[in-house]
Image (tube, rainbow, N blue to C red; front, side, top):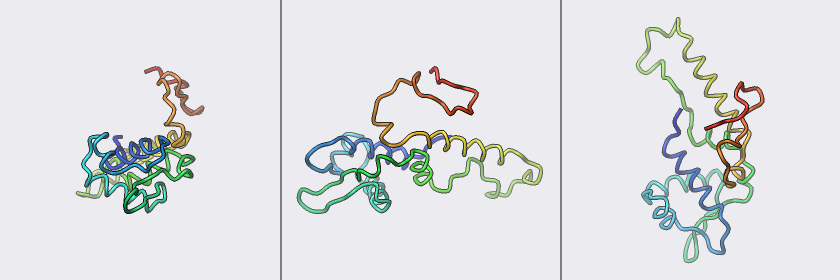
Length: 149
């Protein structure tokens, strides 16, 4: 599974603006630092403000800040919302002749839900602390107990 750019950039923005400072962050500086177009960021910021993950202020001295309550949001919930109604395979567009005898969609849907459940173990606050990939624990029900990448 691959995160879409909207999700990728949204998570980066949340991490970027989580750094404490006295003045709000501006879209212009975020765009420059993350190498993303301002137009794209405006759409993402607008979406996140509607979700109340960020607080925006207009005018001179305005910008955006992380809503402190967003730190406890589960990554799985964030990604589910950002990705929208994602399907790994689309069996209806165009209609697949194998639909009636295929178990692939059910298996992939299950795998996607496992992916989200794995992300649900972590909050936005968790991703703000650098971790070695060797120290990231996987769900206890998983056959892999420790990622050794």
